[in-house]
Amino acid sequence: MYQDKTLNCKECGAEFVFSAGEQEFYAQKGFLNEPARCKNCRDSKKNMRKERTMFSAICADCGKETQVPFQPKEDRPVYCDECFAARR
Image (cartoon, rainbow, N blue to C red; front, top):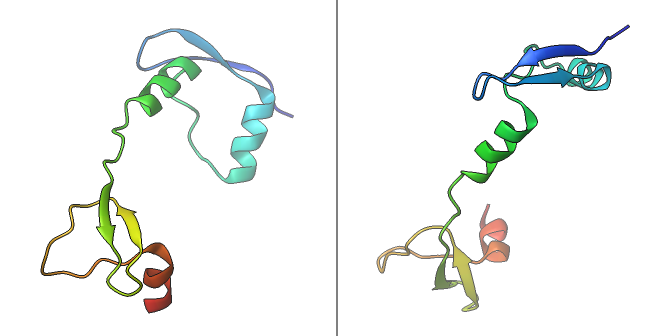
């Protein structure tokens, strides 16, 4: 049903193969667009994402030390994962 296609990467212009298996996977997932970048360009784009800086804080409920992805403020409580989930 599917046949390998040769596509051009929109980043580097290199040709890459959009295999029959990949096409079937895209169809199963409901993806409507073909890939626009080759594997190398996709991987380098993923690696360019900025790493999160984590900050130490003390949970306002249980007093356990935890890590949060934002700078805690003195006037706002901070909760560990377990206490945060329990408050939801």
